[in-house]
Image (cartoon, rainbow, N blue to C red; front, side, top):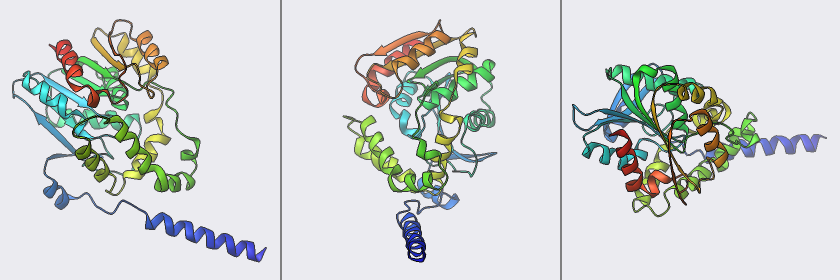
Length: 304
């Protein structure tokens, strides 16, 4: 028993050593670092938020809400198209992503809704604006529209999350979930990201940016909290509420999407029976990266 106890202690020490040695989060996000990175930032109640407000000053505002892991540059192609068409765009990094802070808080639906509200309030966007949400950002967009219907003109949902997102059970186990996330988590989400950007000519540049965000302290904690709490949970009540509002809604989805399934899309359409549905045959979850021009044309036609 003594030998077994000693072996157990040694094993624990080795695992702890491995955990800290392979930590990719070597960098701090602070004022000095952000000065070197460039960009615009605003202080909200839970931390600094990185954002871009672009396009003609008198253009109708379109707010773009990215998904669970890919930050602000998700929208590069959409921003260019919208700005050329005369729209003013607001894109931003959610907490835990890109160059925004990684506060030590619960990353749930309420946090993301609160961040969006505080951002548009601080930027004094008082006129109703259009909202475009992708994946988990679609859930955020629906939550925001359900709670603040007077703030939103039109709503665009691209492969949006509604419910039934399957999270591996081991991520919910304290300590063990942290260890697995450290050992394999970053590699898994990077591999997923690469698959989303398949055949994109700028994939090398964006992969470098994606990996960079994982090196800032607090990234892993924010990912685990997002997976453990209701951020990837049930949004059906919000969908139902928005479906009962007088509002133009566009739903875009790729038929080869393995993350947002046909069942989920059917549920969304049943809760929002008056929406405009535009399926893209053969497109996957990375539809905005894989078919940006076609997606942009559909969005512009709807918003105009």
